[in-house]
Image (cartoon, rainbow, N blue to C red; front, side, top):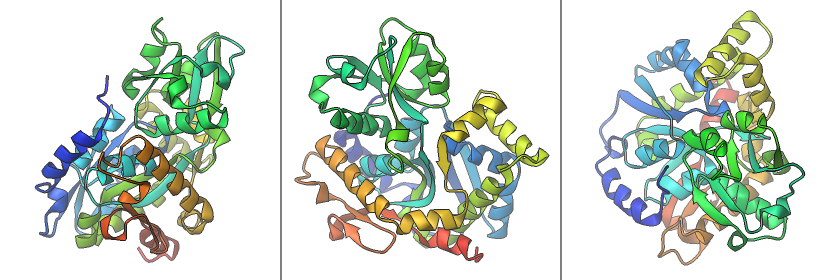
Length: 356
């Protein structure tokens, strides 16, 4: 079981972050990046194993070491504590975890949004979203799964007080669902694929119903990025080269996706089905278009509502404006004097212009 990340822990991690490598002023040549198993994060595995990441790091005279975590929240907690310079996550978790913990964080790469990769599943055929009322629901509390459940309940005219929440690590999704103690779960792929294959279940809500809402990113320490733009350029260049390499039906593209499938513990066919429910921003131009669109601002504002309502911005926060979020156009939602999350468009723009 994963301990939920709460404001009191954020305060402790803030203190640690003051001494973290990502907060040091000295120029860096070696960087550490953490990632966990999820469809939209698997390209990082191929980037490392294929040599693409090393090629881009070499271009800028740096080294980037990737570390895989089996527990998603733990990877972000370690980033927040200053043990890593970057990590995979979501915009919601970036605000509710490191930013709320006092770590100035930049969403460097907009990778994808979940378009069916996340779902709420109940045991029993013919169940509906309204049937969640009074149910015990297992999920990774205060994560993007919790956020999706919050949105789903609102759409059904329900509130969190109408259900009972139980925290669960994403590493335990499938094994827990197969026990008699779990009747309802909020999960994501690849474990979700196994859950959906179980007999006598109902998918009562999934992320296809909220497009461009569950946004996956590569986040980095803002100070580290500012002092070491080569780190941002190398990550961005490697990311888009990897996405290009895995696209299509060529032998090399199939080999790339096969490697990712193996790394996530599944088959190529299943991994391709996961990609079908993942809206990747495949090119820098795709990402830039999203970053300039109105849906980003609206989604970030809903994330701020969720984080404030669940005290993820700190118990002293009197409104969702307690922490400032800087958008790609430079405008700030919330406190301009306390910006802790920055959604960057500069590096995607450089990639789109062929200037990396």
